[in-house]
Length: 252
Length: 252
Image 1 (cartoon, helix red, strand yellow):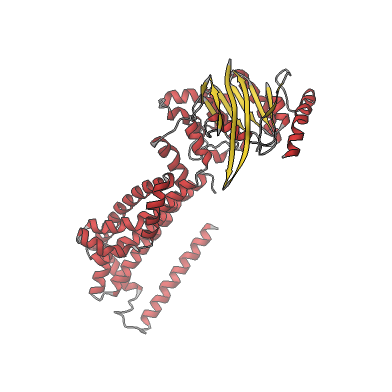
Image 2 (spheres, chains in turn orange, yellow):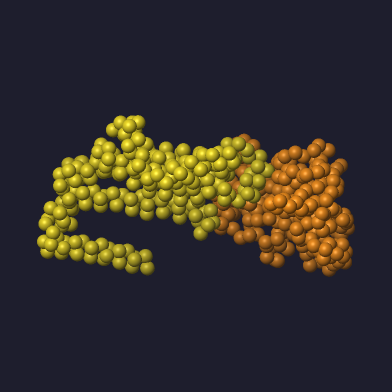
């Protein structure tokens, strides 16, 4: 079943008086439960595309269909995980994770039950009472992911969530992310500039062209899981992505 | 280290009192113009003993608190509206900047005409002296909120007053604290200035009585009390609050 469909998405960046066509008609179909990694040259608008799917920005042309219905605004069925997590520093970890539940008016005891499950899943239980400034960057990203999963969204939208992490932490989270995906069956759109990350995580990799961007190629990833970042068997596929990407990077 | 600084401070104040005492016994100026620290201390003890000092302190602090609560309530609401509603900023915003440049004692004649020689008049002067500092700092705070906080919150279903109370206010709180701190300082000046001119109870009134009775030691004694209250509120209440907020928000 098609979960998400992008139809001819066009978006201009407006700087003062001149307009720059960032997205030049993006088409993408994502089936339920797919894990699609979006790669592309920097500034190609892949993050903007993600924000449009989240309903945080409105496209100039085209539309996003979620379960066949047009997306007009942001909603809890499409939850975004931001690059730096965007955790609320005034709340404890547990309260951060429960934020969406609280907004939905779910009573305290019930919130605690739900958040406990995801705090366990992300190995955050002993940090439940910490404030975010006490956490490492990797821990913060775990909280951000837990906070998104608590909403039980159909679609998880992840905007370079591992970009700021050190290599060891990232490798660990790459494995965990696959387990979470297998366990929760979420549909995931994952923006990254890291080809290895895309190859490890995705069921598909969508390569964006340079501006005005379109999806140049949608490549299925046919390797068995769990995949590791250092898997040499993934190298040929990484090369394949790079050979699509390289000419676009040169153009930019 | 901390103890060392404390000792230096103590030594400094002892030296001041000793020098002061030396000046007063040298009889350069007559005693009724330049009283000794002993006489000032005596005056404090007398006015404490007959209760007039504590009544004065209590009256001034009560007016300060009521004025400050009004200023904080009004200033926060106004500041949020200015930051979130462009038309409010363009219109009322410019007026706020203008009004902030009026010293609070300049409101006294108007307050006397509107409210008479009453508590309400003094509280009006206190509140209006503080409100614009709170407004401007709240405005700046809300304007400087990481936009991802607001987007994440909206994405998780926060809207309307929920968004204001659970994200905008806590996210802007570090700035708002500076506003409260500035506001309190303006309010304290406002309340003493107004009491002086209204001549209706409070520490400012006691200053005035001292002047009318040619009692220099009472004037100096009350000034010391005004200073001590200022130091205590600033250094104990606001400093602690600020330190706590800054570290929790990860800003220090």
